[in-house]
Length: 114
Length: 118
Image (cartoon, rainbow over all chains, first blue to last red; front, side, top):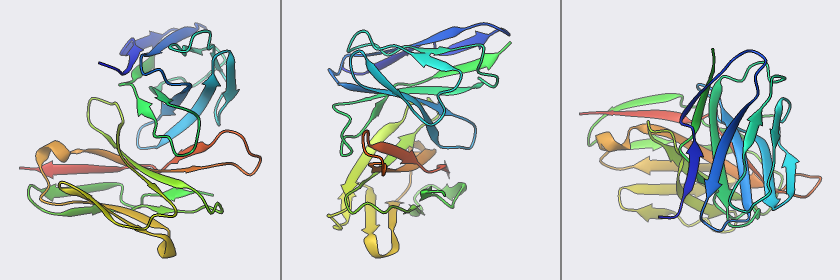
């Protein structure tokens, strides 16, 4: 089945540690996105990528980094510079980056601090 | 300024009741798109519907219906004869192009948590 796979489902980070969240899609979508969701809030955009080897900062990019070396993959690294990383992270993709395209989501990674 | 407002934080109903989830948006674009997503307890967001700004026809899909009113900048979602499986957080979102151009941005409301009790 086509879809978006995020791993791991749960992740724990120690102080000063970088951690990487995986996102893979087999929908042949060009555009991919990372969102952060805090309790009781909507989603906030961290980074997005419209094509391979290109990505742009979203609204809350500080303390995060991404790469887009393959069309299928868009990993997110939460660096030690992100002082409040505890949140639910959602990866999404859309056929293109056009405004009419619905985004399709993975089932998320929950990140906590040890 | 908040661009997508879902004023109802939580709604609790008994099975078979009808329930309407409100969404009010703000945009200066003449062309934009509105979306509804469902987030069940498992966490993933499920796309429900897309509506463009030029199409004000209401839409019905089974027990779900959507009422888009440009005059009041609202895009409300009604579930008829609610079921326990409808329990989830529902998000309304607006897609517009920022004034500086480039990537279209999907702006989410804060969500409405719906609890349907047997």
